[in-house]
Length: 281
Image (cartoon, rainbow, N blue to C red; front, side, top):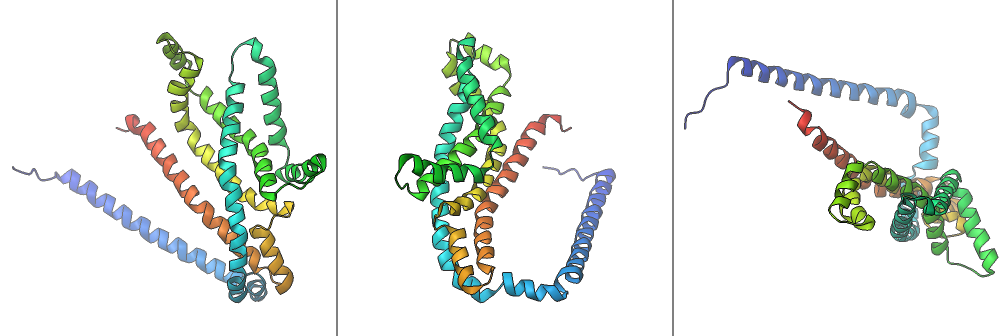
């Protein structure tokens, strides 16, 4: 089989692309070195940096605090793992209630809209106080901190996630519903088989962003006297008079969030590439 050699124009294009790639690499290296020099001059090479390093980045205290902070971090992971399912179930129910058609469902839609407006407006820390200290007082009994944390997160984040799901459902063109109904599917079959599968592609990136936010806010359950990562770090700080344990707890939360962040970026890029495939000539 005879291979046709590339034309002179194609060779010129390849050479141009190689030159542009080499120039981009050189510019990236130069800008990185310039940024490192600026950070060195303005931050690290200053009198106050030694004090900051001693107060927040002490390796010995970090190693001492890590086992205790990790034990508390497992509580955060437990609350997060349970809340993922409770938030998903409550948000899906709210979204479906808000998408019900017909005047007979107006009270239900109004209640669902009021719920989402209320808990999207309330700061999460206030919800924690109301749930953590109000509910045990009403019931006149002690409630486990994990249960209270899951309940507070569910109340708040189900409102956010419900709006994402509702927006995804309403982004599906009405012709898809009409076609499904013409084929004999009822309302719930249309949602399950036609609308939700299409809406899921649009909903996934914002849902993953809400999940990242939920990962961070799980750290606030220390307000409920739960011995989570933040509370354990606070205990070590009280004995060492050093803030390094807080940094250790923060690093654990960052390590938890990074895989989700990278997965979100990858899926968003893949979705954008899929949508733009037909427009690239």
